[in-house]
Image 1 (spheres, helix red, strand yellow):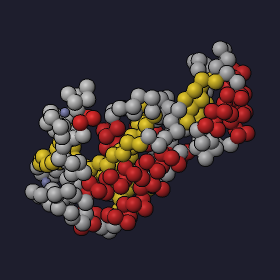
Image 2 (cartoon, protein in one colour):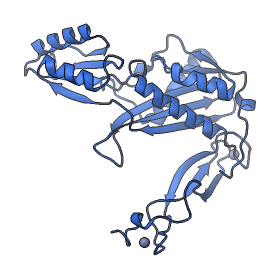
Image 3 (cartoon, protein in one colour):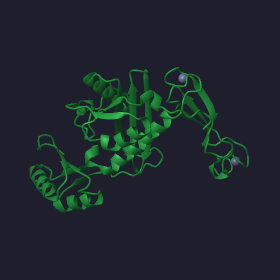
Image 4 (cartoon, helix red, strand yellow):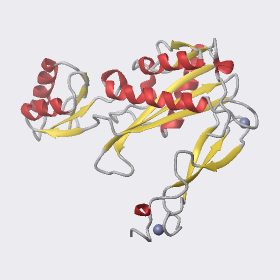
Length: 290
Ligand SMILES: [Zn+2]
Ligand SMILES: [Zn+2]
């Protein structure tokens, strides 16, 4: 990294950082930001984040992850009267490059009203138990549970037909699972019930780990200062492909350079990708290895 390393504590040290969560995400976020930013974490009380959307799809998400995290952080500041907030948002689905592999993309956003700053950290992980399945008997439900790390990871039972009972979330004991599935199967007109992993952080320690990794990414970004205004959070916003093939020199899809941007003064800078070599292995070349 050619940008300067600063100590963001001068911006954040001693300040209260409100964490906008009702799913105990502070367990992943607080130790890291307290140690690296010198903030004092406070969890917004009586603060309902579910109005910004839930994973199970029963409440529609108002906007994409960053906008949703921004809304949560802003609401936490309005709610508490503080000036610094952290919110996070996750999304789950097929991996963008490997369609058969599920992934968890976590975003952690810091909103600083005192310095007019909004910085995010993101992490994409294939370490997730995100799954859903339609089951027809209790045996299948128990097999599913075993495969997804139950009971340390919670489950959700959802009726497949309208009017066939209601969703049950946060199932964490076998007795609860057996009872819920048995009742749901009895009420299901087609004899089918949906079962899925509960992705809320407090029911999903694997996800909690990915939130911690996104928090690490946020802290790393905050430690890069803008070469023009010295504010923390000189952020990688784009990767430009085109690293030349080492054999024939044609551009490949590998990253050649990275674009950094300052949210405070809008300064932008393009620099060669750091961890890469100067050229790409011919196996990535569409001419040498079509
Ligand atoms: Zn080539
Ligand atoms: Zn700047």
